[in-house]
Image (cartoon, rainbow, N blue to C red; front, side, top):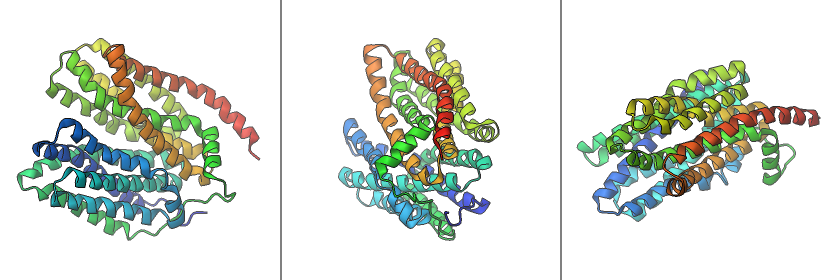
Length: 392
């Protein structure tokens, strides 16, 4: 058994604060560093490549993070992630050079990935089943709220270059001090000593349906941020209009994240995921028929975001329902990897479909994928029942 496995209110609050600050940091750094590099005369393509360092760090960390968490426990890994992000944030203003910032962004990616992985797993593994959906939804809301507040840090540039970075550094230090007060805990170990490939195979066999949401969420988030601006310009929207519409997806997610989590505790996570996937699919499919009507597009964005914006957290909660506790670390790794794969595939598929099919095709693909996911839930019910008969 894991030690100190109960998720108390105080522990949950500190972990939520860590996620809020991580969201603020990422939400601030993405636009802030892009603006500063653009001011320095760096080309747009080089600027984009520099920003990719963050996601490279996140993706690479997922291939080795499970062992440190199992060996050291949750708290040391979260603390290490906080230290890496804090140090990198403090060093950004020291030397404004693209190569130096590339390395620092890698550090932020690694730190963020470690922090999020250990925090997610600690919340999911320590929460009782009847409160798991609520708690993981609070995690999703915390990150979304922090990410939305982050860009406000750009306004601190009026005070001076150091102001936004020092402010965020102070936030991280406060959260680190609070975290150090928590007792450490470890995930349950796999007593059979199975290899990584065997554990991953078992996770997919038992929880393939709960793991699909992480892939779909990454695909949706990246496709909308990368491809919708192209769609919007082609239907006659202005850049300012596009800037107003995109955040509505996140706002919709923030509004429904907690209610969906609570309902999933009461009526079942599979039912909520299937219903949300179906409604989200219909919302995406209707967007091309809204034309350039800003209000109608915004309404459909809010509906789609509200339905599928909590897919990542709800999918992890559902995986925790159907998997043995010792397989949860592997499931979290797989979920994070699939999120990264979806984030890469979204802009690629969207860009190709816009070029060869039409701008509106990005929404047809999104609708199709979520519709197929909703239908696949009926097959998972039979598969889950079949798997249950195989358990000793």
